[in-house]
Image (cartoon, rainbow, N blue to C red; front, side, top):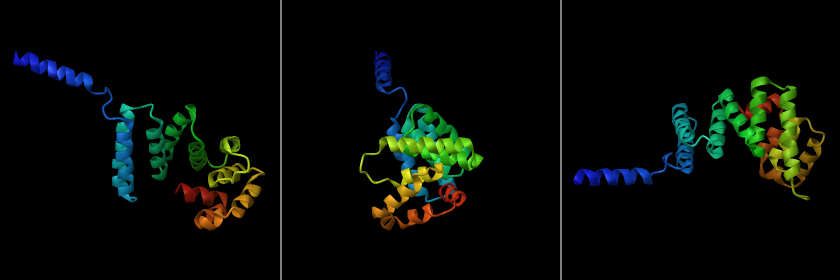
Length: 189
């Protein structure tokens, strides 16, 4: 009788657990905390990466986990791996900031090519489509326009500077004055 009760209890417990274990947010929180704690330490960053990997094994379609892993991989200089994640996300409809990162990773890997320029043009178009009338350009829109070689880049820069954002973000203002290759290497060492 006891064996039957224990088996039934174990069966009920197993049925109540989600098939994939912890939810994606569990892995996202753990990995994000590990990245912040790592403060650039390569070994600890690898541990954070392992958490993202585990989360994606259990939740392969979770875009937030994949995007965060791509950002970490890019920050670690593992551009090929970051590009693979960003390509998967691109196929699913990547957000503007992710599109911009994808373009910069592509440029870091291949240099300035027709493909990278087309990539930046796609990002700039996404920012134009999403912008509200009379809204100030944000720094990523400006960066995308500049890297796309857009004729709008100069007017966006002047508008951004006039909005007071340049005074609030002096480091970014300095980066926007860098040469193209220096800028890419600053963002993706």
